[in-house]
Image 1 (cartoon, rainbow, N blue to C red):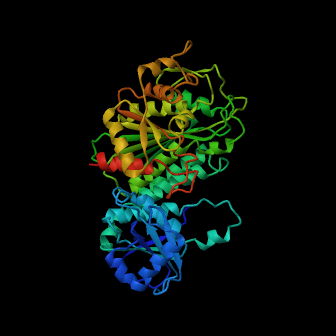
Image 2: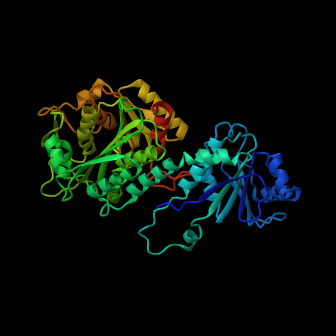
Image 3: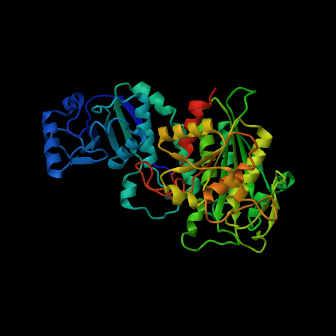
Length: 497
């Protein structure tokens, strides 16, 4: 649940109340303009306080001075930007998160005159975005709040900039992305007793308020289509599966759409191949791919993206009751291909197989990108730093990598060759859903590739980045909303009319 700042932009001038944030390099000197506003006594005070606190102005460090002499503000916060090398490639979203993390007051002014760094309106907007994402918390189920949490609620964050109007306009274009990330985070954080397949589908249905066309496929509709792989996963739960199909038509009428597909296993017990008990509560997050797609569609519709986009999510709960599918079962997918079930905990690829086929068959998209918390193997390979990228198209892979670099939501291309495809051949069916321990992420991707035909396609294994993700300046940990900013940037840079 977001606890947002009220963001404002104003011209440089004297600050009277609240927290004041300024920046210095490793020489501990603010810019001449900031030094003039602070006054010589305050500049000397900063130097003395820095010496006393061993503050060197290194990147991502901060010095806090309470009730600084010579100023009427409550606190002066000095943030270090480091040396020349540190200032060459600043991640302004992360810097905005750092600002929000250091500001304790309800009224905060950030003097954006940075030594050695040009701050464009887009950079200001990115900092505002980062600050808002850092403020996120999910405490709707807590009946007792900590005093410090209550004291930080709300507040006003003012960016003092050279061109307030331009910064405000740039930030307006970030608000939809900000809300999309928060939607994705909320979905992942919801407890599984609250957010089943039907409830998740209802959250997707809410996008109609923004002009998104939403269609929900229930068990009967999926059975008629032959989505037996997805239904096989869902049959062990008393809560039926759903597919939500979201369409944003912002491009030219005759343009083929682009498509994003998300795995939405709202809770994954492993089924008959049940998981160990330790950490199973985290399996409520096995729908982070679907959460990203819903957040992305919100972001695109909010800014009225000039593109035709399809978002499709397969929603199931994987449970081990008496009706659950078994290792050894064989299911016939919507494509007509058959899959032998080796491990019921390799269920996400079964869900995606039917949804990928459905999307490529019905919409004939320019390309498809699927997102899934698919394999633990990708964590072994890439930890929580990169998402695994598998693709049948070099251009799409390169564009995803570029968008990842620009947003900090990084991807790393992994191998996807005929050797891995051969490993999923089955003795009794066209393929098996698990090829064993070795190359687990690549063999899972190889199975998905059998359901995309010749459509340019990329698979993002986000098990490490979207679920249980490490804390950063814009994310306190667990649910990051990973992928919304990445894919919004991909659409913005390469596919809008």
